[in-house]
Length: 131
Image 1 (cartoon, rainbow, N blue to C red):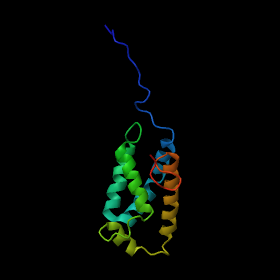
Image 2: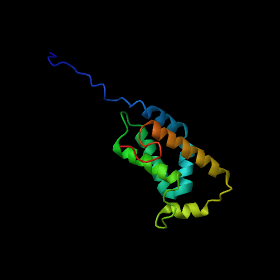
Image 3: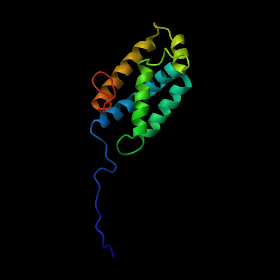
Image 4: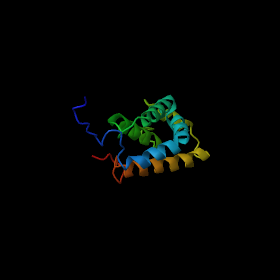
């Protein structure tokens, strides 16, 4: 009846070891990351965090799209595009009060994401994109 052997592929449904702490960081801080993304990038930040959280539900290693979204979130948290007046980040940043307690929380989230991305080997030690 069953003449073909079943060969299990260990890569299917597994996660790369360095990605597990990254996923854990994202889930544990999803609310705070969402609020920070909206505060710093407006509706674009909301779409970004929603796409990331949807992608985290998928089994297996992070896709190329998820990696790009993670790097986009990092750019938002590190204010990489606030100088570009054509992007939503510029307007959102202009409204942000530096004395707001949320600013220190955003800094902590940014550092935590940076560490998690580095540990997952998605970025280098200096924050540049890993090969």
